Image 1 (cartoon, rainbow, N blue to C red):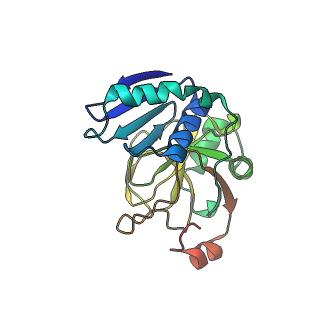
Image 2: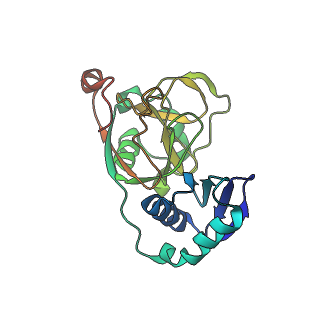
Image 3: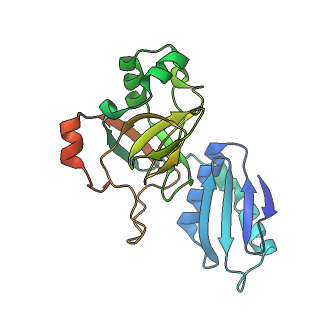
Amino acid sequence: MRLEPLGDQAVMAYCDDESQATRLAMRIRRAMPAWCIDVVQAYVSVAIYYDGLSVDFAAVADWLADDSADTAAPLDAGRLHVIPCCYDLGLDFARIEQHTGQTRENIIRLHTGAVFTVYAIGFCPGFPYLGYVPAELAGVPRLESPRLKVEQGSVGLTGRQTGIYTEVRPGGWNIIGRTPLQLVDVKDEYFPLRTGDRVKFEAIDEAEFVALKGKRLE
């Protein structure tokens, strides 16, 4: 693990792999030292934001280094969220079929059969970057021209990742379906997904999509 300053009130920890980064983020959140303001994981890096009035970079780096052996401990399984997805609302199956050689049925089977890990949150509030898609679905490039409007709840994939658009916005991922659930409410500070959590998609039809529309992820 390599530690570097991130501005004047944060430490950036560069880890060997995603598992070590997830362990580190979980360990800090469990301990939650008084000086810690926030912990943000992004795949193999973890940003630790601290109160610059009570501690400095050297002290935080020492705390992390002294406790670094814990990153070799078994990784706690993150919370498992089952998220319904209506694949009938997928927009880019033809493109995914062309790039992967898989049928629509196999694409859905592979996507629902995997358990994904939340490795990062970003792009828009609460957007989970989920890894990694099965090898049979990997390598599909982003759209050549991003859509100007992607609907809230759209489930996309590209490269080795899949993710969920938590609000309406432009985007270039291949849309495979939509979830009816609300995954973010900024005003209520509702962000149920965190790095280290696990996600499994469950196929639903359009009638179920309508029935579940707007419900929060529990």
